[in-house]
Length: 378
Image (cartoon, rainbow, N blue to C red; front, side, top):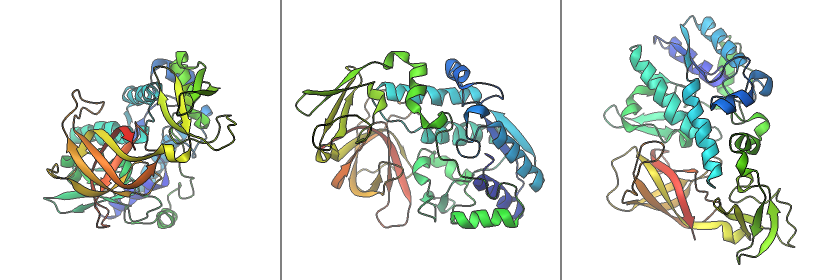
């Protein structure tokens, strides 16, 4: 229970269905801690004074109070789980990815490591059968062959950020609101007297005040705040930047370059602090490889046609996936599997560090698996 309307309605639905429900709030920071302290210590998110309450993350003292109020309204037990130390791992991952020239996705890692990692461990300790959340996704299939599926509301679907859940967890996960559109969720919250029915949605990364991720990165890695070169596809210098971590693949605006034609970020070299720019077509890719594969089906032994989604806010594109030999050591998730994706048409800004999630081609919305993009090519 994050204190938002989605998890609150999810809890209320389970109570009304007759389940024994225990509310859990993930404590990711402490009241009174400043962002500087938390960053220095490698811990969680900013203190309430640095967060737009109700608009940003789900870890503030106000959110905890909202979650507790909802639990009281539902007459269910409410516990605060101290995941502060574990959340520091996500901060470190976020910073390290930018430092290494990649584009991270902390929401996916949070789901993998905390919501369906540490929280599942806690559920087992108290004898709970399932972990439920307010995500817009669904569990389909059958008890012997469960499937992760897209939420009914395509504008709110969150299956992309859930691809990393383990296959053996699917029978122990519930997404009570996944079959509902967001307006109906708010209506139910108001009908049932939940005090958060009109609370605004979270929009930004919970530990990045004002969405200024570069400043956060530089506080932990001050050596990154140094001038570097913009170069064109031929290697000619065309400008300077304040650090490769400040731009992302596919970016067009905010680079202060006047070359007489639009240019986009094509590639980044963290070792040399160099950013390559070029025309739109130079940022298009036909292929990518992914590591840390998590399969929610039997690992394909033959090429498989899929719909591949390589960015949360972009539609899935037709592609063919092929399993590759493991590349050596395990990634942050502990997984070693790799696969390649060949798109049927060029895709723009396929960024290393982002997740690529694979869906069935039949429109059923079943998630087949996914991985973390290592590289992209034409």
